[in-house]
Amino acid sequence: MKENCVNLLLKAFDYDIKLEKNNDFKDKIYHSLGCALEKKWIANIVPSELLNKDLKEIINLIATISEDYNFYNYFPDNVETPDYGDNWGRFANYFELNNRAIANMEGNRTCCGLINSIKILPAIPPSAKSWANCIIISQIFPNLFGDGYNKPAWEENSLYAFKLNTGYSENIIDFNIASKISPEQQLQAFCDLAHFRGLKIGFRTIISADQMKVIINNEEQVFSWNNPEHVEIYINEAVKLMNLGFEAMFVDSAKHIGGFEMENYTGVGALPDYPQAQYIFNEIRRRSGKTNISIVGEKSSSDFERYRFMGLNAGTDYITGDDFYKIRELSDQLKYSRTYAPGVEIENDNYEGGISYEQRLNRISNALFAYYCASDKLPSFMQTNDLFPLRYDTNTHHIMMTNPNYSTDNTPSSHIENLFTKDDGAYYNHKVGEIFAHALCR
Image (cartoon, rainbow, N blue to C red; front, side, top):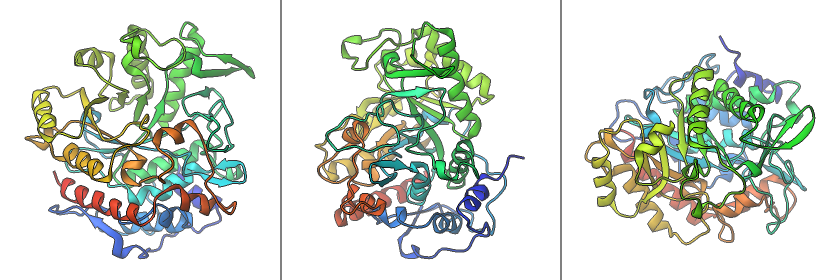
């Protein structure tokens, strides 16, 4: 039996591992409509209501809103991922959580994005009866330009460039407690708590060679797809994460693998060729021993078989969520394709503004209801902004490219308060909660 990393996490912060009911949010508990067992989450909030709580309070809350009505006095030793079969990724809703943006910002340092990702888990709707909800965290490896630091809003600090074979980002891991709970155990605790919440978990990765560096014998090397040692490191880094509890991988620029439509490629550096990508994705599944890993490719084209044979389960940015009938017809067209489908997009990581709350809510509703049968639903793709609206002078792509500290008094809580909109954001979050309440028993 694996070690109970949630208990290790509690002990690392000098908390007792015995859990107690947390009824602070009893008036903000939303639940699925029509199920025998209620799927519960917290809504009608701004994120700071959770992010400014103590970790123990949040874990108490996670136990309190357990779907099966049982309250666990101690976090279970063994928590399994929600089981939707090997091809669950073909039907899932993917929600990218920018774990760097919600990290603790103190002075010019950034830390503990993973702890804060745990704190936001109660506000993410759990998986439905017929399909999974999956969180994709934006950062896991150290970024190249200022990892562990925040910078002014106009200075680049991109998440689209990172280092491999040198551990995990200082932006997300709490290295102050690493002597009590390792970075790997912190990641495992996050996965266990997400699985307990009825969620799948994945991470974003890139494939543009010049946007990656590899550390070998303390030497920094520019990544090359022609270097077998680099390819092995790339595969094994993904396998390590899958063995910690991750089960999905979002691959940036996957549409262009093998030189496809390179006139629209905006990355920097070479990409793997098609057979090499097939090998890499197959090896990640084989070496981890997991047949249920979902590999998601950024963008899709009409040649769906190209992506299916590559080993992908879903592709983004093929159809927006604006037209219910077009989505439903695409769902019907692909109902016999059970391993790969292009997805419905609410917002992507390149979004720079322009979608109203009303349009966003309509897209979410269409993504969750546009089908003849729930078992034929298309995958969908959302960003942090789609559940918790960001402040008006920023956007999804901006916080992927930069790492600003929005604190007005140099405290982490002030950054969290100012990163998101206030009353209108809470009301929007309430409306999203209403949509999911009607969807989760599908």
